[in-house]
Image (tube, rainbow, N blue to C red; front, side, top):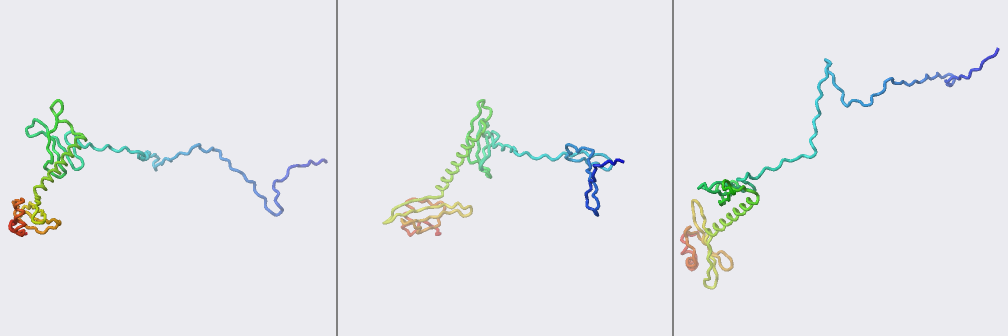
Amino acid sequence: MNQQMSFEFALDTAAPGRAGRAARRRSVSLHTPPVQLPLQLALVSADGTVPARTSAPQRPPVFRTEASPPRLGDGRNWSEGGWSASIVRNQDGDAWVVQMRRSGESEPVLLAPWATERDGAGPKPLDQPAFNALVKAAADTLERQARQMHASLHKRVALNLGSGRWEVTLDLVPDEYDPHALLSAVDDGGECVARERVLPDFKLTSATARAWIEAGFRQAAGELW
């Protein structure tokens, strides 16, 4: 009787006395994964309805365009740097004048005639160069008024008397309740040697200054300081 030889060998080659290992099997998914997953899953309420999606807030732009600054004037009015200019009709109503005021003051510092358009109906509009020229003119007017005020309140007489030179000054004090003046004498060394209070209508001349010095700084002054 012929016996056939088998060439099939057992895969389990574990040593005697050890349990054989179970063959491992890989689970193969029958469904291929989706190419792209949704970024946001839709929420389903209990009744099965899908709520409407709310749009995400938009980001502000990187570059913002600022609003242009407001105009400083409208053609007849201009305000800038503590000054304001206004073009109005004069009292006769036949021409135009410009008024310059400082901020917080009701009275104008400068009042000047203003040119009209070619048709003669309206005034020429104010612009930046014209306003700058008006500010300079108004500032010059204030400076001139300050010099005139100082000159009206301060009088000075210089004279040589004996062996020295004297300077006599009169400063008016326009006090509302007690107006008066201060008469002072300064020697050639720059030292004030006398000061007396006099009436505000005191006339300072070379003659009155000499008389005051020669009288010991008392006779012409009247009321003592």
